Length: 622
Image (cartoon, rainbow, N blue to C red):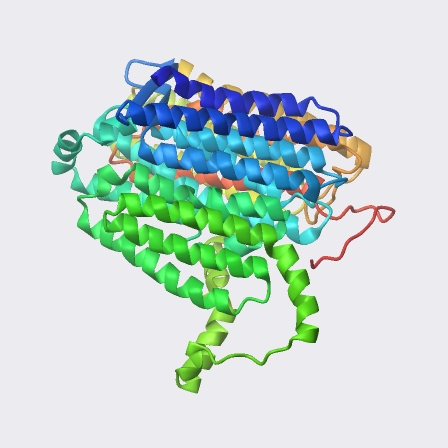
């Protein structure tokens, strides 16, 4: 029975690959390929779940593939199936088949018809991989695929300003959640001294034994997981991104932000529940987060003027209640609630265009004055205060901007002295000096040798801060991302157990995709003469294939699971000691900010309104 799990991953991947090679003009073939892939997956999953139930519903675990193995570390693909997987897989396949059917007609003759179905199938592959994952590493692969799929679908109308801008905002929040998942993976390596599987997490005696003497690490892991779940499921303080994500087509809004993607944080909490269920403080914190989100989102939903925003905030409120149910230990109730919320929000979003058009006509013939609401019973000062706060969304976006993005931009602007010439003249020699200190590290005083890894990792972090805030040269921003990886590698190599082959494995993907991206920038500058990233240029219109290959290079350089760098990132994290918390934080932050900076370069060069005036120019506001 275990061996069948791999087919639920391979089948969506095969459908995605086939869809890439279909001609764009063949709408019927494209839509039938997508629908056929998802529908056959639905039939297979339904039959498998029935068979699994007759067999007594045992927990299934399949170690599929060992990708890399060293003396102290192993990266392997692992699949796990239980009742949580069964519910998520069935609902995911059912709703995606409905969405593909709806989209066949909704997007008829749309310019990006093929692109939409390609991305949906790519998302479906990542979703199944995440749900069937048996360890954190496999989960993270699916997690990343879902993140980039979200970006591409929100920016589906890529000739407009707002969809591209909001897609970048959503991707940035997703990457913040990735910090939590990366640090949780790192700490779990040190807690369990292995690549722990979710099957083993269900062993209460084993988990309890490890947590007895390492309770602080256990709390740290649980908090990191809660942070990742909150970012993915739009919980406080990350709630502001979900309505912005509604800029994409209605079908993608339904499948991503009404039903499946937005409930991945819930899935993460359910999957790791055996680990943190006996940590009372964490359960209280998760419950309070869900309660706060539910109350605030309910107020925000009541003042929205857009039906999609109303549905978005209503969904956030319900997900907050699901977090409360998980914190209270009601796992089965949380699964039932997830299913109900997913079906309801998908239905609401799919019928929203029809409902809006009907209500617009109906109000002229059957006008009714506003009925008295519960808020009218409050004192007027409280009622108006709540109204203004809800209307301003409790200033959550301003709070994130003040805490996260503004400091990044301020730090980046303070580094305006950095240019390509100074990097070559100053930082490359500095890097060589750092390499020499590694060679003679035995002769260095221990106090200096101990702080050098943090110093080198911090320099790498500064480089990606500058790359993130760079507003002129894409060449400089690209070089800084590449050099960041080399500084991180230099920081990690000071740990004695690191071998040269492991560093080469990590940097190989960076070097290859870095060269490809740099050559692409040179070619683009020859075609377009002057390219600046101070605005959106929209070159995807005239260079679509060029844009695709640059996107692949961007994903490779930022650690997306298409090169050895993705595994290399996890590999070098395994070499960071448990007491090197600052080094772990600097490395994780560098990976996350470099991902944001890389996607920003791609978005500025290829997406948004075209810089050339002979192309159609849409309004900035939608």
